[in-house]
Length: 100
Image 1 (tube, helix red, strand yellow):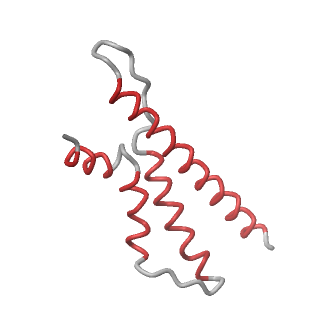
Image 2: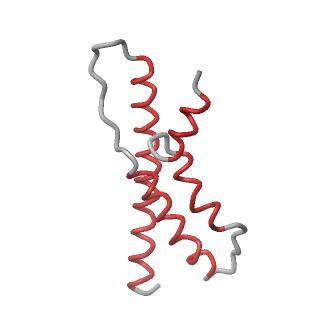
């Protein structure tokens, strides 16, 4: 493995871990904010950063998989999926529409 390949592996791993941890933190903050009573302090979220990092991780993972012969169907759908999953990105708009 070359130095560039090792660096790519390290950065992609860090991006995926940040996305997973940030997504869990955002859902935790969302749950707390929905259950909070008026006037009670609400923790702040990470905003849209985990969704954007997840999209970038997918964007750079797809060509890395292509090197090994794995062809990903509908790559743009997979790139947009982390933005839809994160409640403080596009997923928040979907939650607002569905919420009663």
